[in-house]
Amino acid sequence: MFILILGWLMISFFVFFLLFFTTPLGDLISAHAWIMFIVVDYFLFVINLFVLSIVHIIVDTSMKFEKKILITWASSSLLVAIILFLLPSYDIEESHYVEPKHIINNDFYHGHYMVIFQAEPDVTYYYGITKKGKLVKQFCEKDKLSSDGVTDIVETETKYSEKKCGNSLDNRN
Image (cartoon, rainbow, N blue to C red):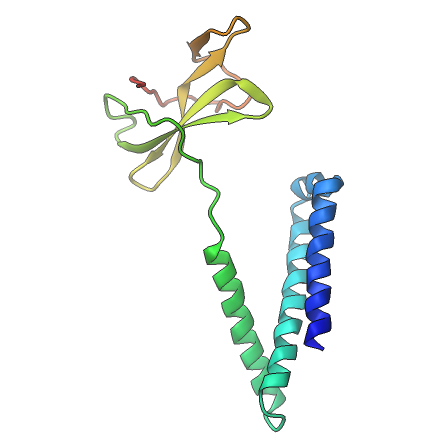
């Protein structure tokens, strides 16, 4: 039985990824986040069913059903926790390191990152991560590539700029 459930789980993952990348399912999920809860619940149910089928085979047949359910719950929870903690986080990836000359907003920034969005490839945004609280802050300055290939430093509002700009990066190397 567990072979059938494992096969069903693998087919479900394949179909989900296929639908996500080849249809507007990704846009639908990003527009309606509650759909993701249904998908996650479905996969958690199938994983739990898979673990229950393995527990049913491994443990003694005279064991109480409640004990089997408890073992299934504990092992499924452990499996999900391991998956969640082993997946990489989606932080801003480091690009070119820059260092400010002065304190910004009474807090030192320990990392600075350059971010370019696909929808706006001619603008480079600068972000800093604070040491206290690990907050990500966007700096006012942006590098804007002009049509003649020259990069200018601008502080004007662009598509992805934050509405209130209070952070300033004084020095870029």
